[in-house]
Length: 558
Image: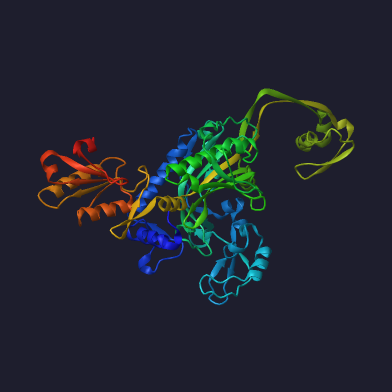
């Protein structure tokens, strides 16, 4: 890639808009910050990336796909911690009243401002006093926390229920745990995936597709027994040298297995998912040398997280976090269990049953019945809950609210033998979370190649064949003499084939049509000419090397 300073980024963004990859949403109304359309070309690209992501994780064999509502009740996101904690710190320019994220303003002046507390941000902001990105003034309000969720009402009138548009896909998968548990016949580990929209009312979205208010995300929630032995084979990545930034450590290179053996990656499944994430990104066309794994520092780690890694990609905007792989412990399921009282447990069976002998008390029926009469049943329940150390006489409050005095003649020792074959526990969760928009942006950024042709910039988008938005471009040499009909017939045959997208283009010179196809990454252009009418052969031109070969139409459509 050429340097940003030579205008490459501006040319790239202009081309994406002109050719229908990415467009400012509602452009005829002036657009809206943080909202973009995937256009006629980008829409298909996004769909193929989404499907590739699903296929990549479904290959594990113990994964199901869910689709949960984007509208979420208030109580769900209150239990998950989003209502109280899902905020960014905001400051407002007093000159132009434009809001900005305080940490973003301070990025040139602090190694990790996102980890600073509000008071620390405010002190640094007022000490640096940076320029406003909009008006260049340097006069800022105090820093305040701004919750990022879009709120809504579920229902109408007085019966309406408070809710939010979801900031992530995860919570629907957590609350669906009992259904997933039954589906997998109550055997862990297993996971659920979901690809869909997320919404965050970003304070000041900038850098195009990097920070959006409505975005495409893909998440896997992988449920594990924290006490079960884990047999993960990391040998698939033994020859893959990866760049790491661990806690309190400068950048270094290593393999996944070595990083795990050294204790940097705490759980073997996290290491496996980091490897699978690396594979996915490379398969999507991300340049391997522009990928690195950065471990969260202790002061930026979520309080419930046991380990968390960001997968960052280098592009025209610098290093950008595009994926997070987190070991979330049991926080999510436990939070929803406490909030609802519903069981979100799994059961582990013991290799051998465990027998426990408990010394306790029970009632002496011969004395309790005549003494307490109708309260005898409640007395029995209360007595059997007393510790063995209880001294009599003793006053006990019953479940009925009555208080009674128990004498020695009312009770007798009772030894309970409890045989347990297993126990209930709350599973832990390991979560890879992907920002699809950011990944697509970097795929395009890495695939975008410029060269000089006849004194002009010539663009080729070298996207991977598996995710290109258009597989074939079909051209008639001229739109006459039956060449256009044959080209249209071939185009429609391609379009009728599952998984193939074709584009017909009969406008302008063949050279111009090749250039338009190269610009959106079409791997093969097919030209129907006079010879095609005679022997049903066509010219196939390769995008990357420009080579042309003559083949039969039947060989393309079989």
